[in-house]
Amino acid sequence: MVSGAALLATGVFVTSFPPIPGYSIFGVFCGYIYGVALGFVPLFIGAFLGGLASFAVLRRYLSFYAEALFRENPKVALVVRAVEGKGVKVGARLGGPARVLSRSLTAAALSCCG
Image (cartoon, one colour):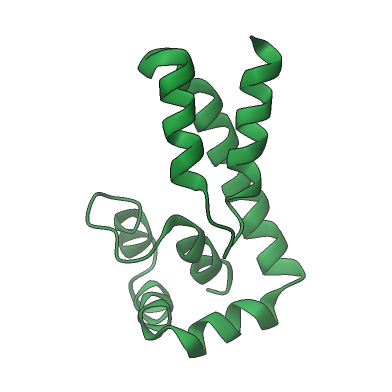
């Protein structure tokens, strides 16, 4: 059971990097295989660690890639401009239910702020 959860968490971790698709599929798999309560654990661990790693890698090594995302998608550029102007308040709202960008693009946008 632990190895299956680790495999699902790894899948979520990998799909946290933009533009790799499949995050939602792994979320459904976690819930289907382990149920809502237990399926939340590998999904949370993979998403949390993947978001941190995505932020760190984009911030340190792939800033040119994140800037290319801004040029291709005007929504991302607007998010960066809003976060730079208003700071943490806007950054905290990006993770809410009225999300403008996908989670991985939000991490890319926030990695280039400041």
